[in-house]
Length: 142
Image (cartoon, rainbow, N blue to C red; front, side, top):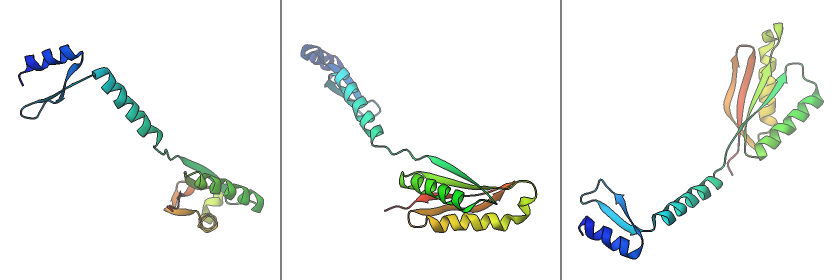
C-alpha cells in the first residue's frame, strides 16, 4: 500500500503508522498506538530485569595463625554466602616473614574447600599473588 494511503488510514483510526522493519524490501510498517506499544515494551523489559539473578563476589580474609573458633565463624559466613547464591573469594594474607610458610596458607584454603564441598565448588584453584594467596568458590548447581 502506498505510504500516503497508510498514513491517511492510520489518522482515520486515530492510531500511528510505525516503521517496523525499515531495511527489508519493501519496508514493513504497522498501524498501532505507538504510546501503548512503548509502554508494553518498557513493561516487558522491567519484568525481564526482575527475573534476573545478580551474583556478587563476596570476600573472606584469613591469616596463617587463625584460631579454631575464628576459622569456624568465617567458614559459617562463607557457607551463608554460598547458600545465598554468591561466589566467594577466600584470601589468606601473609605478613612479614609468614610468606615463607605459604604451604600453611594452601592447607587452610584446601581445608575450607573441603568444609564447604557439600554446597560449593572451587572455581579458581589457590594462587599466590604478592603477599596474598586466594581461591574462588562458587555455589554448586543443583
